[in-house]
Length: 455
Image (tube, rainbow, N blue to C red; front, side):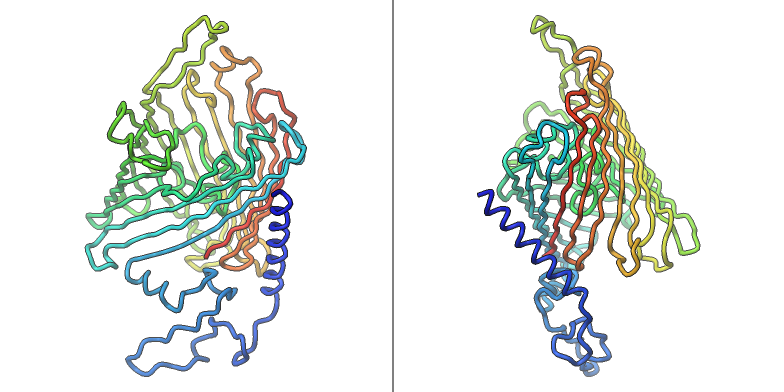
């Protein structure tokens, strides 16, 4: 099985090099066989007055399409124009632990995921204004114990999807309604608090195309969850909004029967409140957008207090109704050109979070980093990024449980190569100092590569 997987990886790499070579070849001259369907409209046959523009012929695997399977002969655009959006993506990660951690012997690990996303717009469907829907169908797989659990032993997780191994399931879904000129936005369903709603960050929020280490994508002091819930967003101006959400606290991350505890069990919930400023600073090449978030959270669940149990003599104690806060900033610092929708340039981010020391193994957290899109001329969609994150163990944990408890620091560098609009290859390198934050492991160096296909 291991030999078969390695052979598969080699074949994928060969295919990717072929694609890179194909993209580097000059495009066929106009009128030649194999010319791209993106040929300027003036070279195509012009429709008669009153007739619709003819759809370009579909060429599977054409490197200029935004999706690998193209426009499905015009069907994809037709569906989107009429309120239905369908997207499918596959991501695979190949990582190995090169140094330190728990074990480096046979430290090669693979993980992957596939996502089918369906979106609906009620206005385009001809129903009513402001309504929308979303369903994400997901699958994950991993190699044996995963990289972190089997080889690294860190508090953070170096690669996404490595802690899961599931067949296809509905990971999240919601229905929503905007009203009063989109000032209010109400969303109900199985919601994911991070990536979609709270503690977002323009340059550090999604493992599919940004940082892979979870500490550089979210804040571990915040009790993020994917569970049944409701979110209300109020945006009275284009530079400020406020939102609040309530999520089922009894959900244990079940992927099937996801709402089984929402209206049953103890009724505990996780609450989040967030205020966001969205200034745009002027520059020689146009506006530089930013987002400045201040968030508060409440966790009604029972959490175990850190106490010395004296080898089992003292009974465990619990505390509920804990609170904390976080900050999350991102700001574009330099823009390469004055095209309004162009995102080439330099951006930076920062996060901070604090949680109660008596029940949280991580009391304080911070992360900082930057990315540059289009650093290399002619490579406008490539992204170079570097980030640092540090989690500090709870002082109460250190006092009552383990005096060695200190802090774990993560450094991550990646370069996303946009081979085509639908294929990205991302070499990724991470250095983890004091993995596990107990001084029991050598510092870790992890290297890997991520492949992402958009069908």
